[in-house]
Length: 169
Image 1 (spheres, helix red, strand yellow):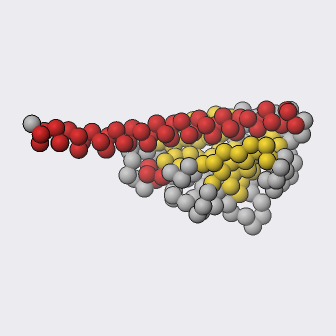
Image 2: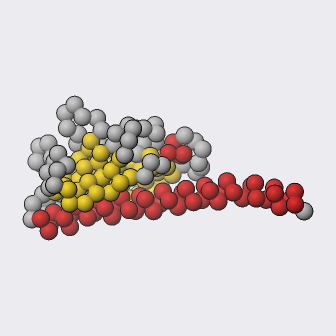
Image 3: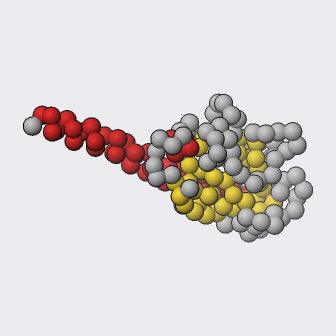
């Protein structure tokens, strides 16, 4: 009887741990979406464009910031991203995003939102012409240790609307 109980526990623990990790990913993707959506509210409150920055160094703390300036100064809000969160399906340290980047900088991505709700490229000041996408997944899914492999594409549309689309890869 004890052996059977031990076998059931050995089978159940990895399944429960995987379910918890997948639930954390679902929650974090929605939290990122809500934070990004808040850029429009902040732009309206400030009556000036605000910058949404993704600071994603290969090593160290990663975070998203809503700031008055493109260099990240004068922060209005910040969201620290957990270490287990993957921002690419290709590598644990990578980022898959089509957001504008400053010249010569590889770990900062940014968008601007103006008070009228337009998504802008901070480098040019022009409205973006295409949907801007950021991939969010669990690092254990990138390494193949957690299945099914789920990713979210957090999308910002040219008129500031943010969606988190769940898919498998």
